[in-house]
Structures are given as C-alpha cells and as structure tokens.
Length: 217
Ligand code: GRF
Image 1 (cartoon, protein in one colour):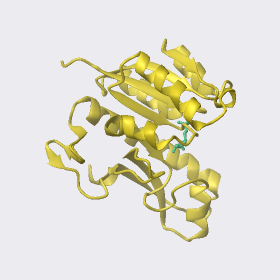
Image 2 (cartoon, rainbow, N blue to C red):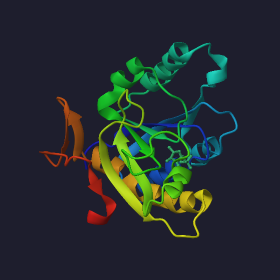
Image 3 (cartoon, rainbow, N blue to C red):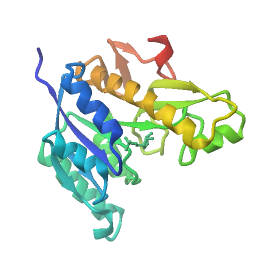
C-alpha cells in the first residue's frame, strides 16, 4: 500500500463533508490521513467532529485579521506547517486571494451545491427551484481563482420534486455530496486523479470536459 496522502481540511460550519471523508478513511476507501482541520468559525460543529476523530484543529478566525491578505497568510502558515498533499475545502465560507489559490491550485478541491457551471455563488437551491430546473445537484471541482469556476471532476444530480423547497432539496443534495466528495478524494489519494502541466488527468487520460457524473460511474 503506498504512503497515505496527507490531507488538510478547511471548514466553516457543520462539517458533514469532513465527516464523510473521515468515515471514508476509516473504512479504507481513501488512502489518506487528515493531518489537520483548519476552521475560521469558533463555534463550528465541524471542530467537534475533528476532535472526536482525534484530528488536530487550528482556529483562524477571519475577524482577527484586517484583510484577505493577512488572513490568507495565516492560513498558508497553518497549511504549510504540516505538509499537505491535498487541501479539501468542505464548506469553507471565505473567498481567497488569487495568490493563495495559485499556490495550491494543483491540489485543492471544493464541493459546490449546484450542477456547475449553473448557479455559482450562494442560494443555489432556491435559484434552481425558481428557474423550474428538473434537477439540482453538486459538483466537486479543483479550485481556481475564478469563484466556483474551476474544472469539475464529478457531479451528482438530484431530481427536484414539485413539493421541494430549498431546504428539502438541500438535504438531498447534501447526501449526494457525501457520496461524491469522498469518491474524488479517493481518486486523488490513489493518484488516479492529478492536475499536472495545465491539464487534469484521470487514469493517465485527460478528464472529460465537464468531468464525470455520479450516475455514469
Ligand atoms: C455544503 O453544502 C457544500 O456544498 C458547501 O458548503 C456546505 C458544507 O456543508 N460548499 P458541511 O459543513 O460539510 O455540512
């Protein structure tokens, strides 16, 4: 078995995606080890999840910094203090400077609650329902300086029911996130997925445009 990849997870909230990754490591699906969890919200429940799993936590409260540059510098210090082969953004609700993103661009993943490129930004479920979409969903993508605009690796679609409000849809999409995010982390840690020399490779071949869909796996 190759050396487990060292993962750093950034959270701001409940941390259910963090939990999904912890569980997938425990079950042997992911050949990785979470070195530390970095959080910007003191009251985030994800900090408790990390502590329960025996993972080091670092609190970097953005309110203690006078701007994005100094906040990102503190993040960089915390990330680089323990080598990170992979950075997993799991509900981290801060926008980074371009310099921060470019530093980690080939090894930083995010999950976004929409079928990108549709519905970047916030209130994704409400907007999808209002537009009469047949499906919502979620996307795991590499992070680039364009917000929610990095290359998509895997998407999971969820049918929108006539009775759905944003909260009902969000719950089903969240469950889909817990399937597809560990899957992509598994691929990265198994070196099936990489971003090298400007292109994303999966099993040695360029990733299809728009990535994979969960239904096709
Ligand atoms: C998820 O909905 C994810 O798509 C978004 O933030 C939320 C994080 O949820 N980026 P959790 O903290 O992992 O439960």
